[in-house]
Image 1 (spheres, rainbow, N blue to C red):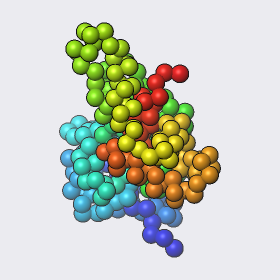
Image 2 (image 1 turned 90 degrees about the vertical axis):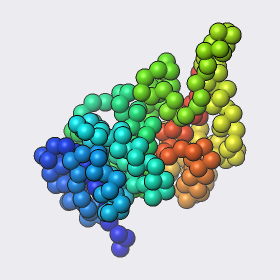
Image 3 (image 1 turned 30 degrees about the vertical axis):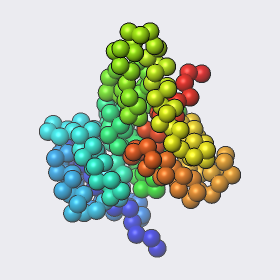
Image 4 (image 1 turned 135 degrees about the vertical axis):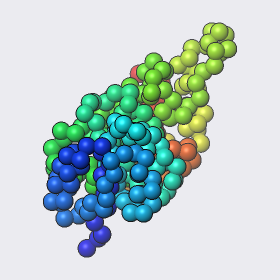
Length: 245
């Protein structure tokens, strides 16, 4: 029998933490290893408890979920998967959390079975939202160019001089994205395009006639080459490189 998924709960509301604990503890493959009431406690607790997944409130009074997620991302390969919780839908704050390194997000009123399944997906390196949500987040992050989602894929923004010179800012961003994604092998590029469509690893494997383990290898390699921490960032870069249409 494999070891249970180790989960750390982070929310400033003790009732929310208690509810999450009750939901998750019924799953035989999930173990709650600790709780925190603020993002400021998270890094130390992760070091002490070694969770596989952190279930994190996105809005907390001192250090919020976005800042705490960014701190965890600095741990590199040792960082746990972060699943952010929000009362609202996909908005700029959620995009900022994904930009910081979160692997997915859930609404706080998500049914218990779906929360458990999301924890399992994040522990397995999968996205914790449906394909349509992935596409909505990509569209939100790449639209306009301003706001919390701007630059989620860390593609350089067009300069003022380029705008003055009459260059289309979206065209500049597209060129920059294409330069970055050119570092990928053809197979990694195919995986990136599939990720941008919101496909899971199993769905990518089926569409490209690969094993799921091979997809994970190509995905990890692509993320490492691009200095990214999650597949949403890769999806946005692939979307920008492809351009409109």
